Length: 88
Image 1: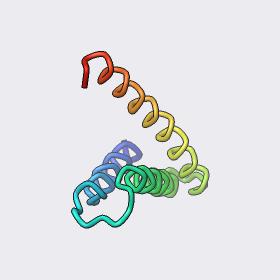
Image 2: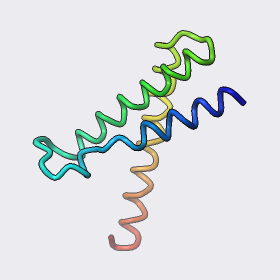
Image 3: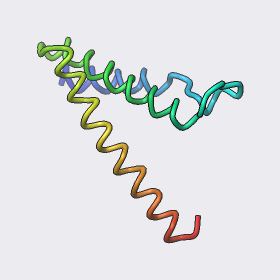
């Protein structure tokens, strides 16, 4: 239960950080910046979870980063497919 609560709180905190789409004067490519910030947030959340779960922080960070990147890529691809099917 402690691990679940820690992971949930980490996702809530990381999800509330303003990103490139919120800030109007973002100087770089918004999509690329959002991807980079998301990957960094995934690593930080995983590393934080690793400290609480008593595993190597860098290993937990890389695990979260890898799994999150795969899931994000699949979600993006499925969204593109659905948008193509419905004409969006």
